[in-house]
Image (cartoon, rainbow, N blue to C red; front, top):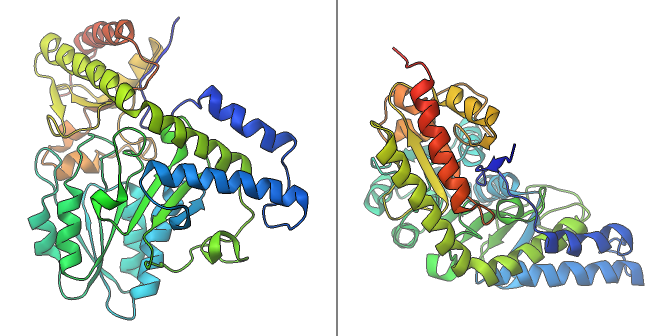
Length: 381
């Protein structure tokens, strides 16, 4: 069976050029970048080059990049570190009801320690309006955290407008850009954000490495304590192979972005049209145009999304029911519920996320198999 992978929002296959960049760091360039001898300085040069490549992809400067273990750590650092840095001033945070759990859980922890968190609801397309963010803010608000692109439905937020509203009120702005970087153009200066989280494995880099962008002058408290690594922002010996692969993935993404996003968007539009045309009652969730080029969230009346995903997997097609980090929880998608869907609708959706290796033939086969499976599966109720 020729398997089809359509779960690129969960993770992506490392590019061969990324692996080639990492292998020397596992074989010969094994020194500790903090060591002053030649072995260490050789590793330091690898880290410095990667930092330049990572910064370049988002329009930052290398000194504004802190390497982390991935998007989850970056989000925790941004939220909890900012709270620690600014908490003496006031203790109110604004976020949204459709954030990834890597933002929602740190917010819940802040609530347990005396912070007040306001969760702004989106509209039915998953869009969070700047006016709604402004209305949720008070004179006590120290941080606004709004994801750039939603991991389940792909809706892209009007983040620059949100940042402008927040900055006029004196708050810092953080964005979880894990699903956006490498898929759409991202510039920290155009977005006007203070903190931005992203992760290598979402765009053909290795797992276990990510970064937190910190605008110059914005210093959240360190999240992991110990040595003086990463300019005293993140203790622990640097993951040199992962950092090298991350840098190469960023370089490749910058070179390929325009071409690949256009091709992938054409495939996802083909998929969405096929679903609507061949499956009566099917619904596509998320904003119709301001959406990630690779993401299609679809619901089918009366169908259990988990059963549908499992049946597709048996037939060699990999999709997700919701975010990979929460798909085993058996609860309805909190994103779709916040967008106004019923619990039945929220449990009946699947997420199909494309990548650069997918083809028209794969999309056409997916449409055909999906149509047959939806017809065959028993309906709820």
